[in-house]
Structure formats: C-alpha cells, structure tokens
Amino acid sequence: MEFAYTRSTGPVVGAFLTGLRGQKVLGYKASDGSVVCPPPEFDAANNAPVIAGELIEVGPEGVVTSWSWNPLPRPGNPFDRPFAWALVKLDGATSSMLHALDAPRDGITTGMRVKVRWADERVGFINDIACFEPAGG
Amino acid sequence: MSDETITGIIAPIRMDYRYTPGTATSLFLRAMKEGRFEGRRCPSCSKVYFPPRGGCSMCGVEFAETVPLANTGTVATYTIVNVNFANRAVELPYVVAEVKFDGADITTSLLLKGVPLEEVRQGLRVEAKWIPEEEWDYSLANISHVEPLDEPDAPFESYKDAI
Figure 1 (cartoon, rainbow over the protein chains, first blue to last red):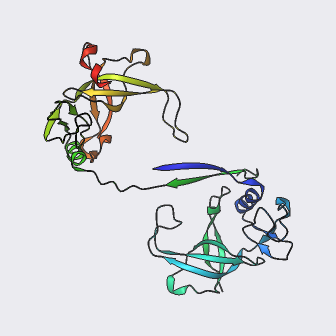
Figure 2 (figure 1 turned 180 degrees about the horizontal axis):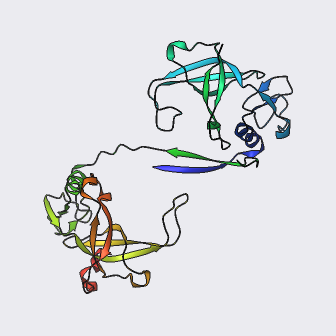
C-alpha cells in the first residue's frame, strides 16, 4: 500500500529545498553564533522566526561526525546495495545533517572529509543531494 | 528547470504487507492460480460463499464442501465511479459491479467494462475476463474485469438475496 503525501514545506524548508535544486546547501546563522543546517523554522536561542531570505550557503564539503552501516537497504532507500547513513557537518555549519554516504565500509571513518554528490535531475527535494561521497585528495 | 520557490513536496509512504491467508482463502487463491473459481458451501443454510470464508457468518458453522463455480454471473448491483481516489489516475468514469457468479450466493466486486454507462443495470449477465494465463498469480487480480454476455437479463428473484 502506498500513499503519496503532499506536504507544505513552509518558507524555511521551502528555501532550503529551492537552494538544493540550484546546487546550494543553505543553513541558518543563529543568534548564538551557531550555523544550523538544515535550517530550522525558529532560532533555538531566542525563539525568533527564521527569515528565509537570511539563510547562508554552507558546504558543499564537510566532515563525517557519525555514521552507521546499512547492510539491508529497504525499498525507497537511496541505494539498493549496502551503504552508510552518515551525519555530515558541512563546512561553515556547526550542526550535522543526515544523508547517505556512498563509500566502501572499510573506507569510512568519523572525521573523514566528504562532499555532496548532486543528483542529475533536481526538483527541490532532499534527494537533490544524491548522497555524500569521499572528498578527493 | 523552474525557478519558482519550493512550497510543497510529495513524500510517498509505502508499506509492504506480508499476508498469511487462512485455510479458506488459501484454497480460493490456489484455485485462482489454476484459473478456476471455487466457493464453499455452508452445511447448514446451503449458501455458497465466493470468495470463500472459513465459516458461515449467518449460521456460525464451519464450511466443509468446496464448490466449483461458473465463469459467468449476474450484476446484483453496481456503482458508477466519477471521482478518483487522491493521487490515483484511473480513467473516469468506471463501473464497479457486485457480481453474483452462477452457483454462488454472495457477490464479488469487479470492474465492469464493455457496456455504455446508460445501459449498466442490475440483472445484467456478465462473464469474467482473465488476464493472460502466464500472468496468473495467487490473486483475484487474475480477473481483469467482467464483460456483458449476449443473454437476456436475469430475473430480480435470482439475485435479490445477494444484495
């Protein structure tokens, strides 16, 4: 059974997804100096609404802060072969975002440098980032 | 590529069910795989259930006898569908018929094709159209739809108890 849920993104997530479509990863520079990516709807320090137009670009490279190997991919996962889920702190951000990491299991370490692999067709969705991959060099 | 700001997304949620049929449904699905309709008869009231169940909901007794059924039947009642399910693209309008197959006492919901909407009616005689044999599975979906037979309508008395 499958349901296609149609969801409103709101202004901030909408701006984030619009950025992805244009190969930009956007984060929010909060009032306490942290840079949160993906951006939240509200500033966690002072509860002020986040203004979509004030988002800043981060990445597209970053560092793996944690990861987990997925040996049994499920339908709808980014890959139909084993892969890693990783928390990636993009350059310029102070928080991490979750996405797939396409790298051999024995080549993954916490602290490794990775970069965004963009999807060929981007529509304004989280899968516009196809995955992260090891950053060359 | 559009340059409009994203305001909505479609996030599909999918669930795969692993279904374990009971005795009655197993018999029914095995017969379907072989291209046969099989119902089961209540030993108390003699009504034949198709699709079969484990027991009679009226009498509360277990079924024992399996009954082969014809590929032909009668439209007991029907609905003309003019509104699609959300996110489901089926060509409108279409007709869902409750078909009482010959030899059965209850009806089965199936797609009715091959008859103009204004001629869809109770009592219409129909036959089941099967998908190609190489595609048969353990499923009622082996029946693509029902189509009218070139026969006089069945009398109301013959299907009134199935409505």
